[in-house]
Length: 110
Image (cartoon, rainbow, N blue to C red; front, side, top):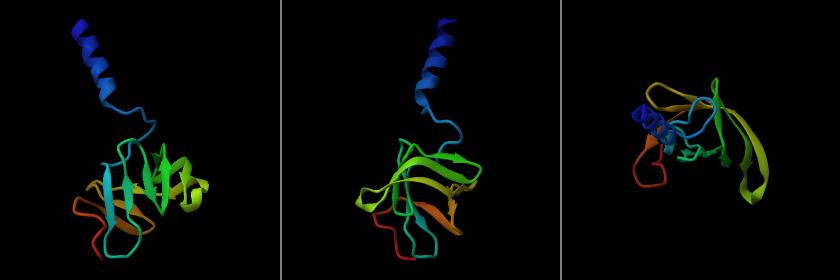
């Protein structure tokens, strides 16, 4: 019984407390074939998209939503944009595919 309790407790510690589907792997996602701003994802549920820095992002039915995003100049706005995570790990946003990039920043030219 004690072993089962410890296993359950450790499992709860290893997963972040998110409601709904989790964001994809953290990192920089570069656009494929077009010159648009990349998408960045951190390991705390933060998302950089459309030149906004967002916290507490939730993915639901192909939409990314957050109550608080920050723009240049400090303006605070909510987020509600299309963002699909494909089975191969790529992202799709506004008709553009984004692929996880592990090379030196910035993203390579298209």
